[in-house]
Length: 212
Image (cartoon, rainbow, N blue to C red; front, side):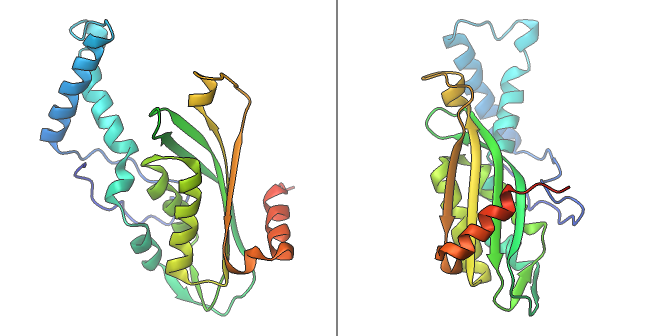
């Protein structure tokens, strides 16, 4: 995978990572060769002006979009755990999600809404969106992505409960196949206190509300 170190810890960068272009030149060269051959197989001419640098650009883009394989979500959470006697629900909603379907390698994108009930510790708020990025920047299916985020937060923070809801549009449905441009896929995953109907209903109500 790419030679990308841990993304810098920036508290002001809540909804994503700073873009850093640091790649392994040998890997870039190898991937570029494959993409050049793909262009030929598709009937294109990689030597024409508009495509000369396309294989390299695509190689770098793919490494950036899959950098989650090189990152440890649990380490990110552990880097900002704070002892705090707060025991009510903490919700971070409308977290942007960008990932790629592992079946067609086409993008799916939308929003994640995440809540947990602390059990003696809280985590820096910027770390929750970063956990989303770690797992979404891999080849994914939305169902597994939802469970991986839930399990990471539950196993690392050990809260009273975790709730995750993800809503996404999938280009593999919009651009090809059934070509349903307005369809949205919603997945959810819960642990602990969120398995109780009252707590889950409070969470769903909070994420459906808009700030005035």
